[in-house]
Length: 122
Image 1: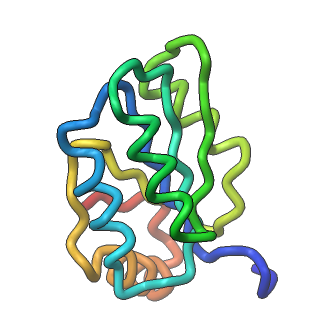
Image 2: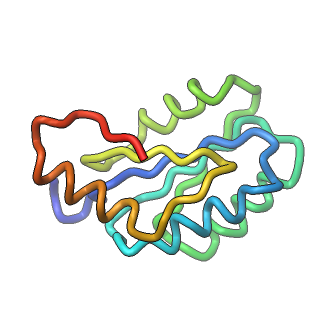
């Protein structure tokens, strides 16, 4: 990886997830591992999700907003983010999930120590 690219690309796809979205995003922003980009995909939400995404993105340069105008589904929304992801590793966080503060740190260190592992769940 070159120095200017993030080590991890975190992806959250959301469609009308305003109830838990802020907490999900905050759990990534609270990570002890800081070398990441955070790709937030708005899958044609009609609730307050776009405003929540915009609010968080305004405060952190690592957050990248991707908007899909016509609803696809979670898998296709994640695939949209994968096309622009720059990290060596990819972490997925659902919009109604929380990540423990050391999640990314523990996962990256595990994958570094075990290069034979290709996929790691949390």
